[in-house]
Length: 475
Image (tube, rainbow, N blue to C red; front, side, top):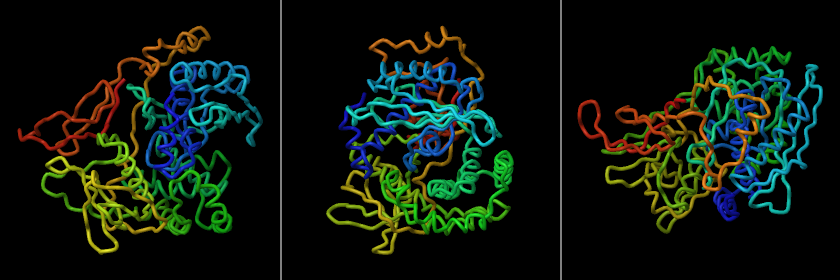
């Protein structure tokens, strides 16, 4: 288990309650345990807001629950769930020291509105920040949801020092299906987090699916729930309620709470796009300087000191939420719109931004930054925001299923030796394929490592690309 100080330091840097960060840490290992369990690995499909945070967009609101659609309804059984999570708890404890006591797990099976059985589970744990308390992770399990698109196996973001070398993976809803579920949820339960999620996904233009595909997925989701495809007029009666709950339901999940109006006011453009209107326009990127390489957020390995990396995390969050940043730099404070992180030809890492005090573009060396704070003042992007991820990873799931007999499960879940506690054993050889963002040459790795070797482009000239994008994972 990581040291308590690591959680406290991250909470301080992100302006979050330490218990929120601790739960995010435990959620990563819970997903690892579920993925390692052969009975669940390809029959529990991850979904919801935590899926967005842990699988698709690392710079996102923190979440607290694990939601799954089960493809095997027989798993909705109290005895099966208790036995399985006892095995998962042992597996997690052996590798991390996180306690998941079998006698502190509750599974409430109930009949949902469609007449099928669902489950609300509560998994207690004891982590590095809560040695005496027993916080809970809530499980939401259903077996009668309609899966419109094929699930994908995707990497799980686990930004902690005990991240296994082979990575953590989850079997998850396709990105378009998570998006469609969020729109359906916004119409059906009108919660602030659904409004936040829908507009954030809409703003991420590079990941925006076809409106026709989205409308088809949403139509099938709504038909299954017995509701019509939502329109803006359906949400108008709930406007005051959403605004009243905005702070209470979101403030603890975010380093800084964006203003409610910035999200509500974007709903008309979202619904116009959904029904065949224009997609949001991406402004042109700020021009590349000579020898500059853009460093996108996903799979970024800057090899910076922890303090500098934390400042970048704060700036990336602000950029994704269109919020100004107060940057302490070389003895003074600047208020900036953050846009792009780039490596220069001489190896320095620069943040390109617009200084709102001076009304001009400026660049700032990351190693000279002292601190950064997110404000609640929004901005309309004047350049492309290159600090946000380029879009969700789409990885084909493995076709191989593991044996699910109790004996086979126990063999798979048997604790590893002390020397290998931190390693999540791969199921077969995994190859990670990275692509150079400049010359598009591909590099294959047997572990997640985005650093690119010195190489030449197709014309035989040395290429300046040093950090690649993960474009495929082969099993």
